[in-house]
Image 1: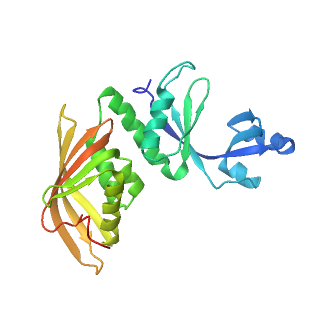
Image 2: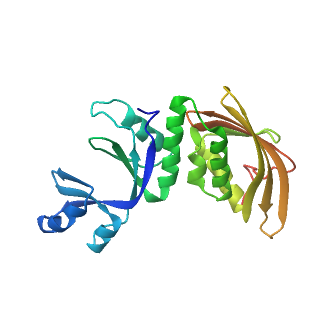
Length: 255
């Protein structure tokens, strides 16, 4: 089921609401996509606009990722795989099991990242990881200064090395600090003109590319770099950077 889960991100934005009083329930229940009678009262999953019109709390908007595979009610492992993959990336998942499919409700701001993670998890199960796509996601997040997007491509124990400058960072916390300093030290960073080569069966991919850093004074610094990426289960376990010139990823450089 994991390999064939085929996650689909729906367009609507939802909120979880409750407990709902008897009078409000009559007006709200027809709009709900899910109802549940808890000990505290009636809980509903409502479209955001409906909840807002009725002055309900809309501070935690959710998007729904439907797992298109038809899951058995006594099936084992799918919920754990989905929840685990999202938890590793720090994404909350509220999973609702209906008769035909499971549905993961995730924070709206992280929905696209969550979808890509689940797509990668399914690909990893089949052994068909698109390493080039993972590399593109990683650099797109770096260029956008999107730390959540970067971390979503890394395992918790990922190792990041700058081989040309003797730097070794272990784990997401250390890597996060390095990227925060990179972004704080530059107005912008850009990676382009990629040449990507995968090693079939080795779970390794090489990327050669150009770098353009916009410095604080507006001047431009250009570099030609090459990275090697090792990946497992749809995420990077090791990134090795070979960099021309000074180390712009200096982990000791203050912003």
